Each structure stands twice: as C-alpha cells, then as structure tokens.
Image (cartoon, protein in one colour):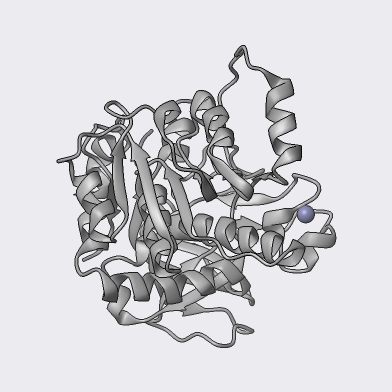
Amino acid sequence: MRVIDQDVPEPGPREVLLEVRRVGVCGTDRDIVAGFYGDPPEDSTYLVLGHESLSRVAKLGSKVRGFKKGDLVVPTVRRNCAENCLNCRNGESDMCLTGHYKEHGIKGLHGFARELAVTDADFMVKLSESLLNVGVLLEPLTVVEKATTQTFLIQQSRMRWEPRKALVLGAGPVGLLAAALLRLKGLEVHTVATRPRDSLKARLVEQTGASYINAKETPLDTLENRYDIVLEITGNTSVALEAQRLIEVNGVVSFLGVYKGQQLTEDAGRLFTDLVLGNRIYFGSVNANKRYFQQGVRDLTRIMNKWKGLLDEMITRTTSPDRFEEAYRPEDEEEIKTIIQFKS
Ligand SMILES: [Zn+2]
C-alpha cells in the first residue's frame, strides 16, 4: 500500500466526477491488501482501494440527468460484464452469469479511496443531507437488503409465511445492520457473536431491541430456539454448518460470508434429510444492485431516526488518508467500522 498522485480524472458523457468524502474499510479490503484477491484495471499496474463510499457530485458528464453538482451520492460497487449477460443487461449485475463483471476497488476498476474519482451515473443513488455522517454505511447495508428481500421473495412465493424469529450470526457492521433491519420488519431478533455482553457490539444489538448471545458463554449447539430466518455473516465454516441446524420447519438460511477452504467431518446425510423433511432452504447471496441501494437509503434513514446514535456509534475509528496504514491494519476486537475521511 502506498499513497500516489494521480491526474484529475475527466468524466465521460454518462459519468460524474466525485469529490469523495468518506470511505469505509472492510474485510474485503484487508483481504485485497493481504493478496488473497483484487485485480487492477487493464491499463493499470495498481488498484486504488475503496468500495464503501460517500461522495459529492463535483462535475457532470454532458448526458447525465437526475443529478446536480453538490448532490450527496453513493455509487454501487459492481458494473456489467463485458458480455452484458441476461442479468447484467436487466439491471441485476449482482446476479451476473459470466463472472466477468467489474467492481470498483476490487476487480478491474479503481476504487474510491481518493480525493476525486469518476463513476457511471447510472449506478449511483442520491442521499439526503441528513445522512452526511452515516451514509458511508449504505454499501454494507445493501448486502443485507438483498439477502432479506430475497428471503421474503423466496418464502412468500412458495407458501403462506409469517416469520417471527430471526437469528443473525455475527455482529460486525453487516451483522449489526442486519439486526436493525430485521427489527424494523418487526421480527424477534437474536444476534450471536463472541464479544462479551458488556461490549459495544452487544450494546448496539440491544439498542435495536434484539437480544445478544455471547457464543463463548452460550455455544451455538446449546441454543434451543429454532428460527424462521437465519443470516450467516461470520464467514466461519463451522458456524455455517451449525446454522443449518437452527432453522425452523419451512425456514430459510442465507449465507453471506466467504468461507476459507476447510475439511470437516459432518453427517451429510442428516443435513440433507433435515433439509427435505423440514422444507428448508439454504441460499447464498452476494453484492447488491441499484434497487437494493435505493431501498437501503430509505431503511438507513429509518434506522437513523428510530435508534438515535446507533449508526454513529458503529463508526469506531476515523483516520485521514495520510494515516492509511492505521485504517487498513488488522481489525481489533472493539472495532466495528473504520473510515477514512477525505474531506470534512
Ligand atoms: Zn453479467
């Protein structure tokens, strides 16, 4: 990692120049820094990081409509694949068939961890000024917007379904936003994580009216409740296996982690039989298209208004671009979201 000087990019007719305000740091960024993945643009030998962002429009391309200079905006992360597959050309690049999509700050496109950046105006949503401090949390929220929307679409199209209990595995930024979103939907929510019950994470979970379970005191395999909805966000393979046992009859679990290769001994027969006899559904969900960003803007506002200070408290560290090493260093236990502030 290093800081470099770049020329000010010039937006094309359908692009905008963004004056970046804030960039969020997440596990994906740290995995890129560690070399697990990440691809620079074709004409570049380096990749600018940053896919969670909040910017102001600084300049509009000649054909851009619906935005003006000064608008507070968040661009989506993924852009259509070169083949423009069925799903990409229908506004669902999150469901891309070819895998040849590009992602700002991750794969084939520079990210937003810079003072000025350009992006395609068709992949951008506008935020109200009230979201100036917490709008950088929109991108992580969209991941749960997609998973929960798809959960309800799947379930309500196959039967009459009135979910009551939801389990969230993980209390990082995505897990906390998942608990808040499911509470907004009126569900009884239980969140499991490994921090003590007097930690900030536990306190933020409880602020939404969800209950917090410390897995070190109450291991997952001792939970007696069964849940209509389970969201697996830890990315831990053993937790993911355990998640399948916690689903209620007709229930659904979605997996949102990236699981590192791991061989485990497991009674696969029992898992499949449970799946069949309980009409259960397991599905995976990744990324989010513009629809989920639009939905996320509405829900982020609702979360901000309903639980005062919750979103602000999730931002546990703010650094400046010249202290980038501090921002990307490995996560400490009390950290929730670190952001880089480009302009105050
Ligand atoms: Zn595609």
